[in-house]
Length: 332
Image 1 (tube, one colour):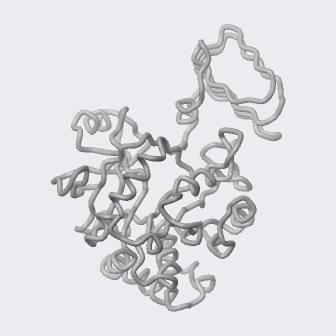
Image 2 (spheres, helix red, strand yellow; image 1 turned 135 degrees about the vertical axis):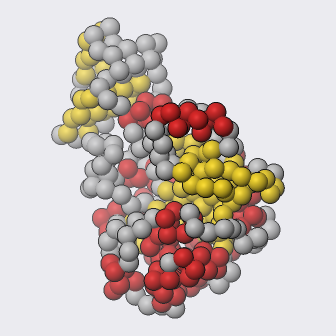
Image 3 (tube, helix red, strand yellow; image 1 turned 180 degrees about the vertical axis):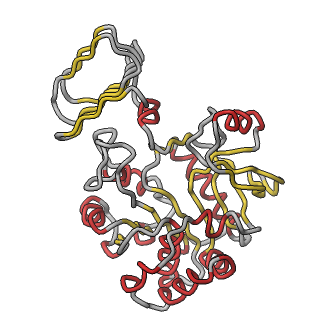
């Protein structure tokens, strides 16, 4: 890497209401705090795949007040690095706050921003891609990772990759909203449209300059927070806006690095089905209790206790049980 390890920081965004994977995730236990593999939570996995690129002292987690308490219990990070937002204000204020807190510690820091609830394999390729992004960020770029699609997904935003500026790195022509199926098919066949996985790398000074140019109100907050102002007092007054709308879709110095790893944002039951081991009849099962299947194919079964579950003559159905809540649906 072109930059010293102690100048690299990571910000993990672990907010959310826990709605998309109910009842596995809830507001009391949002997606980053569930253990889909029965071992580590998604948040723990996200933190661990950053090592040894940077030290634990340089990893920040931004979340809500309830989740911050749980995160401090399970993560081997300095407790003060787990920040509870006073309220939800989308990703741009979250990133501005994190950048300000990092600047308090290091004036010439480079920061990695990533969500807490993705599944990424293999870790080695992910880290190699991050190193390339970190190096590219030293050229005053706002760098984003783009995942080449393996299916015409309609649930993701897309990045249109343009002129090649280095090996695997391209200028960004445009950001595209979640498309309909026909458009997603076109994007996949084109080959220059990649999924926006929401992983960013930039120097703190560069994202600050972008806020100053494209969202002056948020830049004023950043400046005050970086100088020691208490964000708890005025965070609520920030505009609710994503980093894509606030900066990325407007800036001219945005580049995309083609990801070499496998990625899944685990945002739907279909995504869970994809990553879960299947039986001979393509049933995806993650359960502690006894599961009986009779003429049942391509189903998804999740259960976090020893409840006995039996499926008869059912196909492409999801049965999700967590605690006292149960979801049965054919749409996943």
